[in-house]
Length: 93
Ligand SMILES: [Zn+2]
Image (cartoon, rainbow, N blue to C red; front, side, top):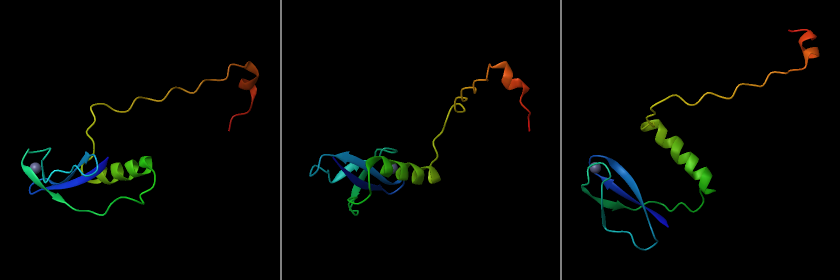
């Protein structure tokens, strides 16, 4: 798969994944469905692993369009308390 970039006059650049060599001349904008023109960019040949690249993309995207959440993240599991009664006699800082 390859990533092709298209530019909407109102919403900027969006990317579309297609098999190599099958890029359409125009793609609909995901925001307004208007036809967008293809933008030629440098290939991502040396961006490292896919997970590292996804992290960089997500970080860059969160700067301009942070994800909207409906609830706070789930709380962490409570730390289990020691049950040995001898530990209760140890000095506390
Ligand atoms: Zn648009």
